[in-house]
Image 1 (cartoon, helix red, strand yellow):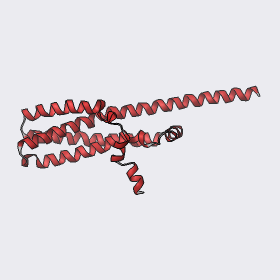
Image 2 (spheres, one colour):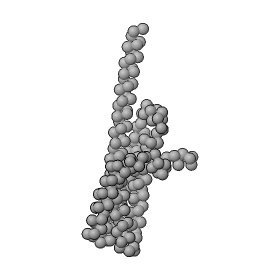
Image 3 (cartoon, one colour):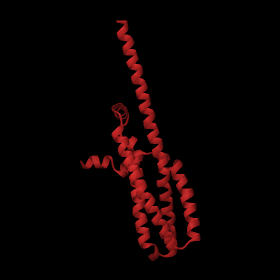
Length: 182
């Protein structure tokens, strides 16, 4: 069971993705929007206000984590046997679910860092606190933008199901015509 846990874990899921998949477009958006936005906010408000913003991150990420996990469970449960067979014939099902596992892991990591930030922000030297806030902003924006990647996965899943259904209909029609001609 422990080897299966490793196969479906966060670090293994990251290993399933190419660097381009991680960085483009969500990663670049997070670096630009989160990095620049976090830097601007850091220069405009004090550490107490930044703690409050991190609290807002916690509320949003907690809800998003629940939604993403539920979505992943629905996709896994509703996946047709044809889709499972098709994914298994290629490189297995894990590359299909890797973006979901990465999203959940990243959201959990960001939640933990936001809790730690809120607990220690006023104890840290100002430059270190501000850098930590900017890193938190980057991770928050990435977690939010990663919903786009998951949307692509769901749409791709739907397209595969539609193609499998179309193929099955064509095969049924061919079989029907073959049985008539006999």
